[in-house]
Image (cartoon, rainbow, N blue to C red; front, side, top):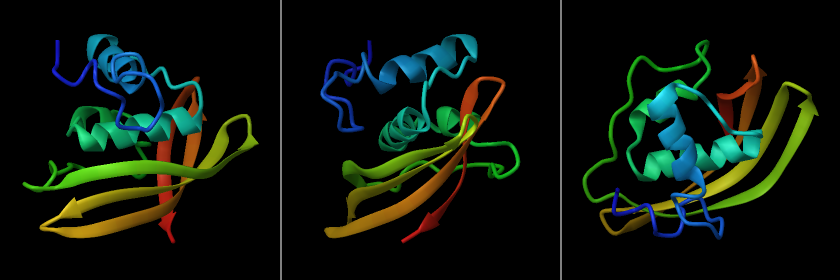
Length: 134
């Protein structure tokens, strides 16, 4: 068991990591299935994946049309401070968006990332498509 499994989930929900984003990360690793039931849930699980350097999960949940060839792990000393989902909406059955703020600290300097992310559902699975920074 990972030491983080019984800690609060990095995504900000009240559940433990094991019962929140951890189950999505574990299911993908075990069977290749993407289980997020909404774009918001996928976005939260991706934030947790960034916090925990789950690069395979990030790659698998990134739409093939916009997925980078590779991702780099977090810089040494980077500390993720939290996630706030501002708004989210469904455009139609297979397209949605989530606006969020993620905060982190690196080298003693706080940073803030605000993005409106776009998601698409294909064959029942949600994927991150792209985002516009605010």
